Amino acid sequence: MNRPALLLLAAIYAPFSGAQETLDHRFEAGNLTVTVTGEDSEYAETRSYQVVVSNELRVLSRLDVNRDGLVTGAWMADLDRDGAFEVIVATGQLDGEDRGAVDIHEWRDFRFDSTAAAALPPAAQRRYRGNDQFDVENGRLRRAFPAFNGENSGDQGVPTGELVLFEYDYPANRWIGVSP
Image (cartoon, rainbow, N blue to C red; front, top):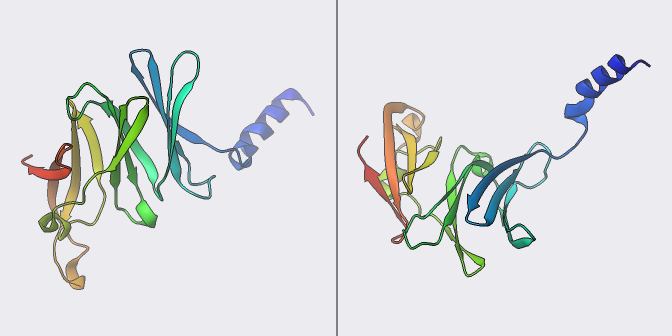
């Protein structure tokens, strides 16, 4: 078989090879490299992610987080402005639903102190049906999602057209509503 034919066959069968695809986010902090790697659920039985901190010579810490969701974003910031960085990892499609969540891993003394962000306030939960969008801007974690009508089963799926915005207060572990 000639070379072009082999290349064509390789390109056709590559998606079916069973190779595990990963989605990486890399950050630099001084002489440290932080990598967040989420496994593609198409290839992995469980959906999880890793946070790895390394320097030029070795891996200093590896954190494995089993989260039944896909990594939708990762950031590095100093949310509490104490000089130690936090690695923020957003996940979506939790338990097969459109819900999102965020984990915060603070790097201190060559180890992680991890926190799951608090649940939304009860008033916001009544209008929440998922479709979260997380972002970190100017050292602040933000969350947005479309509002839905209704508290009974008849109209739970009706979006209002309004976007609900929250900012995370990391030291107090709570979401605070903000105006658009």
